[in-house]
Amino acid sequence: MNAFESRSRTLPHRRLLGGLSLSAIGLAALAGCGDLSDFVKPITPAEISGEWHATDLVITNASNPTISFQPLAAGGAAFLRFSIDGDFQSIIQTPGQDDDVETGTYQIEGDFILVEPTEAPEDTIHLAYEFQTSKTAFSLTLISDDFDYDFDGDGNEVPALLFTVVIR
Image (cartoon, rainbow, N blue to C red):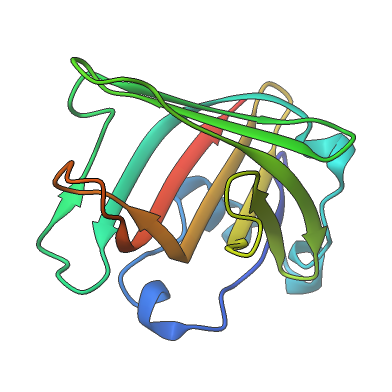
């Protein structure tokens, strides 16, 4: 395998993946490897544990794709933390607003990273992933079609699609 090592997972729901493509690095890695089975390896908590900084984050209203929120484009920031013992935390910072902090636990199961929020454990979020490593960086692309977000600040979250790329 070349300089990149990738571990990809796909969502069973084709409606989300129709609008999303593999990252350029993922395509480069796929083009450079002759055996696709090299890409179907589960990740481990040890591989993803640590602090991650978002380089791309798009949250799209599932029922109206013309409505989306891009906190990074608005001057914000987003961070994820996966601990080796299964704790999870996400922070989305948007100028002029309180931080949106989510805590919970996670586990890696089959094709997904499953996040169970502390405030709503019954609302497990299934995150399909693409994990890439190189000699100098780690990248994790996460997508989900069972995410909720309050787009208009009225306190009511609606179903949303999540796409984010984080690096460590």
